[in-house]
Length: 359
Image (cartoon, rainbow, N blue to C red):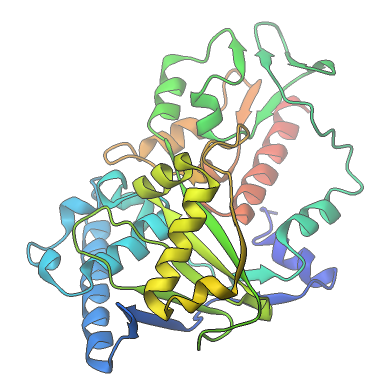
């Protein structure tokens, strides 16, 4: 029996969490300080379809090249090409078109149910881990696999076992936060280097109940220049009817704005809202927050993005070493990369393999 698909969704339903299905959620598009006209929305649709068609054509051809390299020559001249690229790349795959391989796009699986949890994702993870012997605030600093088994050094002592499953992100591995003895072989280190972390950060903006004519549970996007990468923050408006928007920044601009800090990120996101709905937005604004995934030492990014020409790095990262070191996580989750559920399925699959190998 293989790993369960979307186990988190099953758990959320079983435990009575309030879910909001986001597949096919509505979209409001602004052009400057007004909503796009029907003709402009048609132009947006044309750019979106042309972009997607180009990616699919390259995917069918099995190309391991950048998204940017397969765009039609006239695509950059189309109205809303910038919006389409920013939505698909930085806001979807957490990197810009020149930094993404077509194979990641082509091999990405369909997800029939994308849900938000009213109580928050963390509450689901906490519930799942209640009965598990999890130790928090105990980071692994060294993994010694020089003997028959492995030993993992932590601030709380050393753990010895027959095998170790490494689930930290390629960003953490690349940063050398965990020292391996002996060092990981060159082919494994190369795989880690070819799977840099992408960034899709979130900026929450809380308001006092004013809605600015925007509907609940919809995506709010706007026209940006076609020159990439764009400085953009697209939003999810009033999820579950809460008095906040969730802004998204990704790719190169996401890294730059995250490095500038919370105040700068919140100021930028609020400024983009003001451009669309007017300066009254500042009067109704209460506070904002930036997710710290760029600087978070446990992730150092959002999720892995294979570089053009290096899609095989995902397979190499997945390979075990000496039947002692095994690797799992979203970066090696096959068609479900970038997803928490993908990481779960990867971990379950690898755990069963470890049990078989050492059993």
